[in-house]
Length: 373
Image (cartoon, rainbow, N blue to C red; front, top):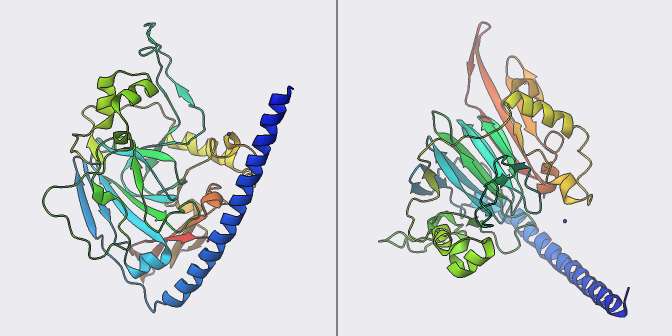
């Protein structure tokens, strides 16, 4: 997304808008100045002769999966201004919906499943055909949600800051997701910590960012919980806000749930979703002319219809190919236009080792993420 009283209200609104814009302009100048100073300091501090591979520093176990977080205090992550998380979701596992304070790129390293992102301000694009015959307004609402996407190995998924999303594993093997969050992005205006705000469950506190907290005690003993965002509200307030009963409001708060952020779905979830080929064909035809539309043309013309997924494993999409060396594929704003807004890109390389002209051995592939800031 006239009477004199109306004119007065309009004048006050205009004055307030001018003050807000002026404040934002001044804040932007201060923020830009401090950002450039910090960048200059980082350029002096972040001089690496070599980049070392790192293993996850924290491991969080949930009912239907494992979450691993790399050490944000490591010099390499700190200088890059990113945080890295890996989720391993078991069969019928659901990664609970959450949004973060920074944009992120998600790479599907293994498996397949479903993904959905709820973009604020966008209309619900799906409504169930079956309506309840009950006249009770609490029982007469239909199932409404935004688009659900199929995901598979090799997909790159772009999520702007503040967009809530969830993942579900409907395959026979674990669904492994690697998330890179750009904590140095302008959308994260507090500090260099990443923060995840869950809309369900009772997540562990360790899932939150811990940058600049070296030496903090492990806490020992009982596991601490940070809760979902609804736990801060009174049950009666939630019941009135969502037009539900207090029992359901109590269940939404999930204060006694100890399953973690990846829960197991008792029965298989079923979705109505197009096949990969049909969806990709439609998205490619729609996205061809949208590379220049990331301006103030209205939220429904940009975010609401944006393509969020691009497969980086497809050999036909390689940017550089050598039959004796390998191939290199890049995902940027040209093939995934939303990346122009979140200022991120990704690149994956497949290297070959030629043993003899008739035998080619595949080396492990590598994946790189880049920020445009």
